[in-house]
Length: 195
Image 1 (cartoon, rainbow, N blue to C red):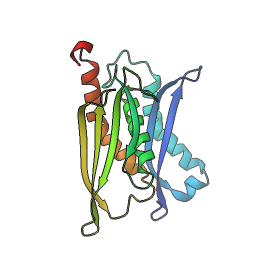
Image 2: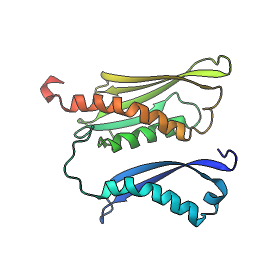
Image 3: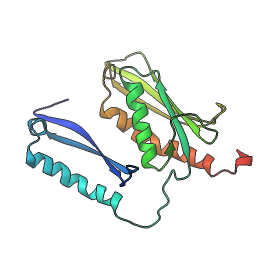
């Protein structure tokens, strides 16, 4: 939402190879001059591009083989349950994004190899203009048994999540994704007969 002529924007840069396969993504968080953004003022666009250049260059440049946190993990991220507004869609999309950033392979349908990531939201009764919120990310085997979970607790202004979650969804997922990735990686690294 615009404040004093400025507004927050999220820009998603996707790097693909010549066959159209995605190589990497970079999500850029910025606060911009609203009028300059709406009119695509060259100086504003150039500034945004210059800020994104280094992270994007990191996707392109060959730095050798690097082991990333979620490498070897496969997950199906199911639609978040219990979220008001557009939280189900926003949180699910954001978690998929951050897991992909950690090199977790995301699948759209259940497979025997894929663990399930299921998010749920519980909002409590408002107190003094704030609503306590609990977001739980459970990691499940294909048979539905739980192997781990990450819980987030906070308080938000009453009613602030009743419509669009915006970049709040990305902030929540960004905070939870490392814990979810660690659980996925732990199971992926466990010999099949021991799981």
